[in-house]
Image (cartoon, rainbow, N blue to C red; front, top):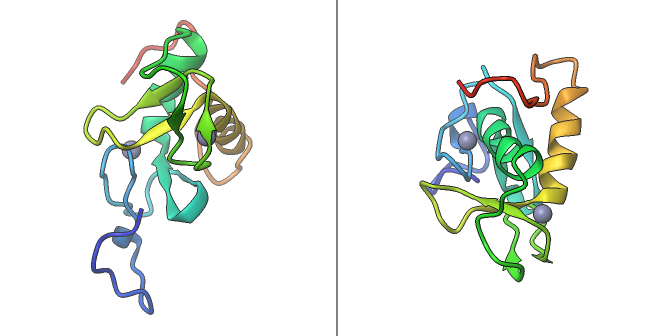
Length: 118
Ligand SMILES: [Zn+2]
Ligand SMILES: [Zn+2]
């Protein structure tokens, strides 16, 4: 998301904030954009991927609204521990992970079963 009060005509990297960890972007880590300016950092995406895709868990029951695609979803999801209104559905997790995984600008790989959380 954009930092509240950011100057839209003169956006700085730090005006872009991860919806899930509220970490401001400094240009040094990957971010994936969803609809309406929603953003998820590579770190949060890795946590979401482990939780939903690898561990087959879900934070919420079906019927939640995904922050990234803005759709009402029935698949498993990950909810931000620091910002409960931020939720990402499994489809968006998979799409975002594939996007980052194949992005040559960033050294980001899909977590695997035996990779340890940082
Ligand atoms: Zn984040
Ligand atoms: Zn979604």
